[in-house]
Image 1 (cartoon, rainbow, N blue to C red):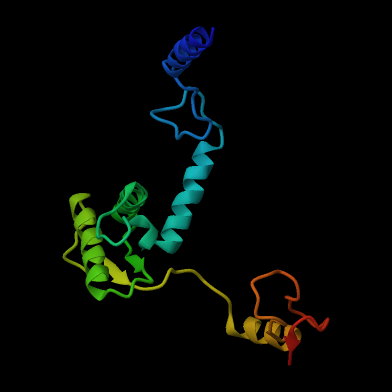
Image 2 (image 1 turned 135 degrees about the vertical axis):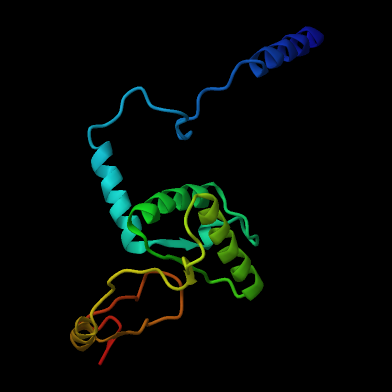
Length: 174
């Protein structure tokens, strides 16, 4: 009886192991979708405007500890190259990497990719700089500091209790 139970359990395990797995719900789409949203064109313009305003490539666009672009980096540089061809501009490489040789190699990888995409790289097209954008006006920052004070946590813990800013006495110092 015990032998028969193990035999049946083994056969069931083999049969269930040979089934095809369910499709992943979070799998990335491959190819073109059968149905597209009416907002797709608007989203493309919004994304292009954001790329033109920022034009930044950072450490997340490279394989860790290497000067090799990952898939996200190649997609971003591909789109940036088409925008640079139409409008010009300069790509910023923003990095927190302390290794200067790696930073230089990554900048060279960006230049090489843009050259392969048909961008004239005889001019300076990549610089090591922070991400762009308007940021906050100094007068606005001064007014916020004058009205809200400086953030000082009550405790040196990572918990959310006892933290806060503002005039209510929860960490504000003037």
